Amino acid sequence: MNNKDFYKNLGQKIKELRTKRNLTQDELAEKAGIHNKYQGKIERAEKRPSVETLFKLAKALEVRVSDFFDFDVL
Image 1: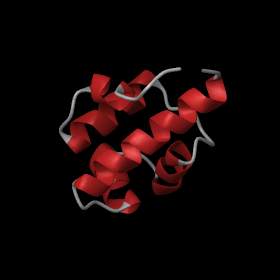
Image 2: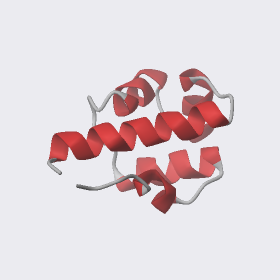
Image 3: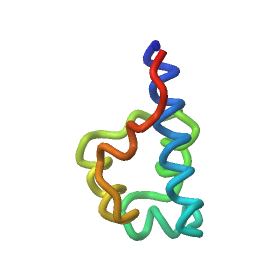
């Protein structure tokens, strides 16, 4: 898996967890204390979130950071 695929999978996983909780990107961004446009860019793999941002998102989604990496790696 290359970097591009990794961040695409990461963004898709965050989106999946967000939609399971019936949150919009704006709502998640507000809960996590990040900018809503940044949230969208993370989900579209246009930005690479820092570890700090991943912790904020995990807390807002009430999941473990490791849950973001629960995808198949080839």
